[in-house]
Length: 372
Image (tube, rainbow, N blue to C red):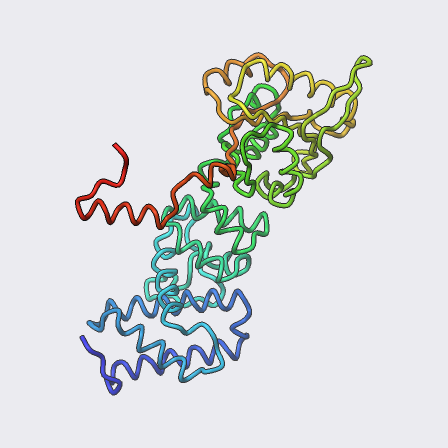
């Protein structure tokens, strides 16, 4: 249904929106994040309710955006796209499941039956902890409430930028975190075992590495250290890099740990061993040896037991579980993925996009482009 600018109901409602905006501007600048988030909640609610009450249809949002920008030319956030985000924000979080009853924020209006009109607790918390740009990314990419809560909490805890948030969602952190095969429940006390389990992922995604075959573990180590910022981001919060090929002298013999970290939250050393192969049970024995050495030579009295992470290209779940079952030192087995690049000599032998398109055109004309 077409909305005319002189529609009395629309003009009256638009004036209410303008008054509300001016009221918000008097209380605090719209740049203040909490006020901004709560305002978008109110705006999304007003738009959603008005669409239910009337037969205007979604096209009214275009008109609202135009009129609000005209009334407030110096205020950002009234684009058509942003108003749709506000509507989506309200619709999603108004039905968001909460374990605790919804507690109205201070100053929230109440309906006649005493039910709060204001936002649920999670929205009030978001206004304090997460920028609107981050919330829009969550609304764009997620629909499952459990995943939304997960990424919101991770984002707040780790201080992610919007780009990092988008990257972690794309890399499916939700389904990777805490999924490694470990013996932590038997090797570590609670709650340290649960915390350690949630610290390790499976698989690890090293898509910031571009490796050309053939390459070995040492090549991967070099690349990881060269991209230490991205590596630490993938490992997660709390990992402090100590060194690569870390030297230990044991019984007059020299041993070298692939990668050594200290985890500030777990308060322990973490040994990471890289294998550019599938997992073999004997790898666990060698890693157990390294953990015993670090516990003896490096671990302080206030440190928790050293943890080991075996990173392999592939693993058999049952083999990994059996390999860790009777080992007393805490360790886990995870896979890792990286980007493999074709060697230059192979790149030159591949057909170009133009050649492929030419072959397809020949096939469309009934020709056969390949030699019999």
